[in-house]
Amino acid sequence: MRRLFKQQRIKDQGFSRNPKKFFRLHIPYAGNMELFIKSHLRNKTYFYQYLRLLSFSIAVGILVPATWLMILIAAVLCIACMSLHDRMWRLLVEKHSIGVKYAQSTGYIHAKKWTIGFMLFPVVSIHLIFIFLAG
Image 1 (cartoon, rainbow, N blue to C red):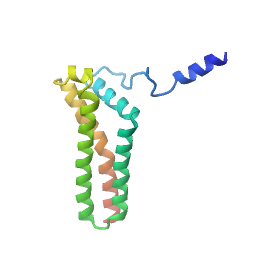
Image 2: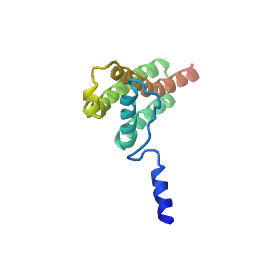
Image 3: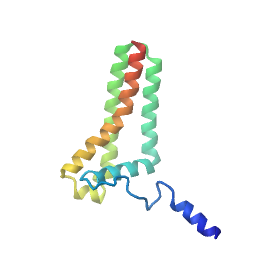
Image 4: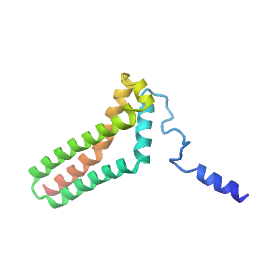
């Protein structure tokens, strides 16, 4: 009885090796987005790089007093976030067998645009908040 309870507890974890699908709808870009999100969350180095980028943007918002300098640094951080996304996308999706198979599809391009938008949203919103608070 005790063994069954432990096995069920391990089975209910969110990011196990046999997880359920994130997206219930069968849309063309859901597979690529799901592959990117799951591998991004499972690999701690990618996740910590992104958190480091977000913490640096918060530190810039607190420490830099000039608005024009904050906008310039925000642009540089957005470029850094886009390059981080491109590197992760190449490693996680383009070199994966699913990514190679569907590399030219419209769903692939659409998923890449959505994921870069989701990665840029926190960086841009943090800087907008600090710009409005400073000005």
